[in-house]
Image (cartoon, rainbow, N blue to C red; front, side):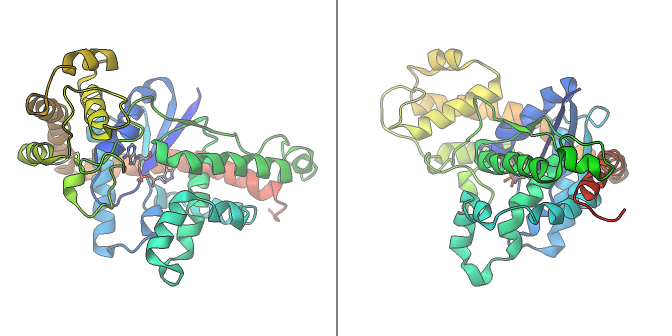
Length: 341
Ligand code: TYM
């Protein structure tokens, strides 16, 4: 079976972008692939954070995975920091990662520019190396993510190839290893729709956990009246009718795409259904569709959170299975890099 891994940071609330761009797509994949889904708590400390909140947010994120339909009898669900190999491999990989590659990362540039060099921890720069470890440890074939992770995936691929070239093949065999490729080179799986869910208050910037205004996003756990209010107040335009793919109408494209994804309709169907609507008729339709989609997730979330020992056992079992795979890769890397074993 081909293998798939992916993860979300336990920072802020999980929103519709995380869901439509990533988590929702995991659900179908778990039936056909060997899947591992983790909560990347080690990534969540790369910007200032609240120590009182980290473990709570980690559990909540795990509960959201399950509430969205991740099935622990099919997928391994675990917390990144519970599997030591992630940090260990990161150190080994960082010796082979050119600083220039990291300096070029858009997310690093954006985030560090805001805070300034004296305030940014080194981990923000090396963040993509940890992400590469998350993926390469499991010899993953595919990584389902939103569009904003594309560049990190490219770096992961380049790093895998570099390590395979520098330490793999016959060199590794001479050291007593099995030779060949140390890492599988993974591919991103970016969904045709939902890969870039935009802000409700600005159709040109992506929906994000860190945007200061909560009005800009729909969180998966937003109650009905909050969803209703956010859609009522979201940015629209004054063109007649509704349409996809008009670059002058980014908000319209975004809201129709969201509608398409939460109803499971095709783009064509939505285009026809909404062509002659105005905002006044579309907004309540969208609100109802969102609430209908989110409500069962919220009910399941409540049930999962009310049984703490269940979640703990899922995460413990997930970490055990993950560690088995990860430790094996790590062992090979140490050997291929020439360490005394
Ligand atoms: P994070 O926590 O920022 O986001 C989690 C997932 O949600 C997607 N996403 C979006 N998709 C569509 N529209 C949006 N507005 C939107 N915002 C976020 C992201 O693309 C991502 O798939 N570095 C990663 C976490 C990570 C990871 C990994 C992912 C760490 N190690 C290994 C895959 C494999 C991150 O910060 O995602």
